[in-house]
Image (cartoon, helix red, strand yellow):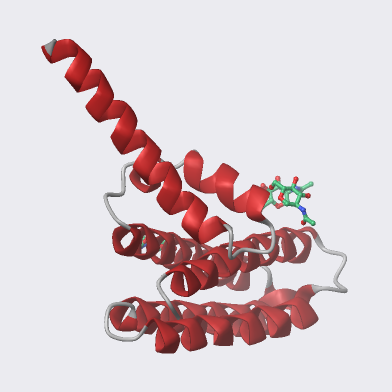
Length: 166
Ligand SMILES: *[C@@H]1O[C@H](CO)[C@@H](O)[C@H](O)[C@H]1NC(C)=O
Ligand SMILES: *[C@@H]1O[C@H](CO)[C@@H](O)[C@H](O)[C@H]1NC(C)=O
Ligand SMILES: *[C@@H]1O[C@H](CO)[C@@H](O)[C@H](O)[C@H]1NC(C)=O
């Protein structure tokens, strides 16, 4: 009897977290990407409510922006001919991080403001795509891929603010 109720408890909490993931991913253009990414990320799967999941999603974006900015900074040091370009890319990703952090702070009081600030990040990724998009060197191509992934994470974060009413 105890075992049965534990099983029921586990399956109902798993169901709930899937529902939170659904609630966010239905507002994301590529819902498949959203579902696959969040279902494979244990902290997202074990989120207890929509607000926690939205915060987890924004934190993922912040961490990805930080790592991508770090890649830009390293490349600026290693490749003299690409220094200016990658310094600009680093600044742009610092901007993305800043907006995402602002959005995280606003999420509870005003999902609408959070939505707006995350939306501004899409202007930044567009600018970065202009900077590296036509370049043939390996670092720029790698950076373009990272920027496209950043865009997907931004889309999921926007979906999270919409799910919260933003
Ligand atoms: C949506 O995401 C899936 C999984 O990441 C990917 O295979 C697919 O190409 C994406 N679709 C579009 C239109 O980007
Ligand atoms: C940010 O990125 C740097 C590498 O560029 C890494 O050392 C650091 O741990 C990262 N910080 C966070 C909070 O992810
Ligand atoms: C291209 O750059 C990436 C990231 O720095 C690196 O992992 C990869 O080995 C490079 N490929 C080539 C062919 O230089």
